[in-house]
Each structure stands twice: as structure tokens, then as C-alpha cells.
Image 1 (cartoon, helix red, strand yellow):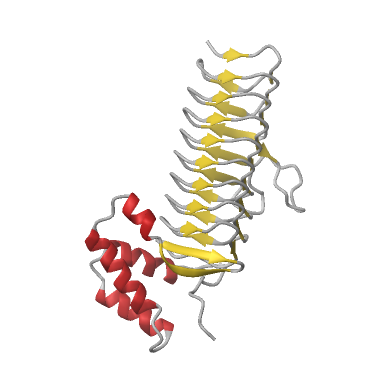
Image 2 (image 1 turned 90 degrees about the vertical axis):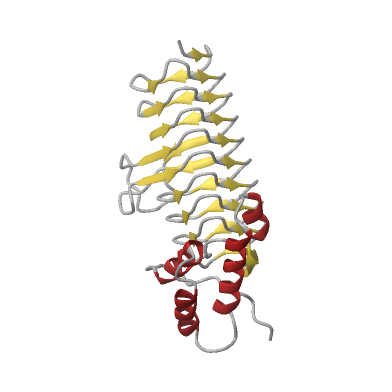
Length: 264
């Protein structure tokens, strides 16, 4: 049996699993689905066509499924889909998609979204992502698995942030970040690889060495960038992680690539 506080408002039509906990003064809209084990602590608003996966915990004053902050939005029933076991802290906002975009904002599993972080319309967020306090994603941003965004960092709309990358606190990300990269600054520039994160995630020394060698070759001074990219692809064709970076760079993109800062 669901544990719903008497002061909470749950609209008719909401689909609530049997063991969901809904705390004081929370509001759950008619098109919301809450899976088993979801807990809303208090003062939480879940609206729109929104689904939360199993075991999500949502803290006070979070607002999930609000309409996109987009002038073209005319009230269409777009979606927000949140995977299982996410921890969503106070004042977090996640918006539904737009009819002119994907129509859905997607958040993966096992993430930690700290106080005041924001995921805008049509974003795709992977698994095990950490967004520190105040980190912000513009519309249509795609973030891979195991990305860490530092406090008050922001990603420009349509940016791509590759898997296992690290975004430093206060960084303004206006260009695509390669997988395994580490970026800092305003505007953000590539500082190297996310070596700390790779070691913490158990990547082998062999894999890390291959990534470091590929990085040095890719961002060397000799030749054109395209020539260096082809050299990396040929030299490290058997290294899955290196080829992930190559494929990321070769893919169609809406934003330019975040590059190392050159000395003047």
C-alpha cells in the first residue's frame, strides 16, 4: 500500500506503485507514473507526462516534468522519462521535451543530481551521471554515461559531452567534449584526459596509456587535425576507447569541438 501523506495531492489518473512514498505537501499530476520504491520526501512537484523509475528518491522543492522553457512550446503533451535509482536533491528541475525537438527528455539510471541542478528540454542524459550544485544543461544536450559536471558548470544547447568526461566547476561548455576528456574554464577548453575518473572507474593501465598516447597524437602541433585524426584511427584501431573518441569526433554535430588552449 502506498504511503501518501494526507497533505499531498495526487491527481486521478496518476499511476502509483504499491510501495511509493509521497511526503507532505507534494503534488503528483494526472499523467505521472511512479514506479516501485519511489520516494518523494516533501514539497515535491511531479507534473506533465513524467515517469520515474524504480527506487528514485526526490527531495524537497524539486520540480520534475514542468513545461519546457521554449517560446515555441504551445502546451503539447511531451514527456520526461527518468530511469531507476536516481537521487534528485532539493530544487532540481527537469523539463519535458518539445514537439519541435525529440518530444522527450531522457535521464538514465543511478545518477546524482545535486541541489539546484537543471536539465532542459530534449536532453539525453546517460547512466551514473553526477551533476553538482547548480550545474545546468541547455536544451538538446547529450551527455554520456559516468560524466561528472562540477558545481555551476553549464552546457550550451545542442552540445555533446562524451562518456567518462569531467567538467570542472564554473566551466561554460560551448563546444563538444570528447569521451574521457577533462575541461575547465570560461569558455571551457580541454585540459587533458579525466585520468582521476578513469582510475576510479577501474580502467586498466594499458587502456589509460593508449588513451594518453592517442590524445598526445591527436592534439600535437604537426600536420592538420584531420591528418592527426586519421593517424590516431590507424595507430589505435584495436583500442575500443580510443576509437570511441574517433567516432565521437567524426559524428555529425551541431557544435564545434572543445580543444586544448593554445599558448599565444
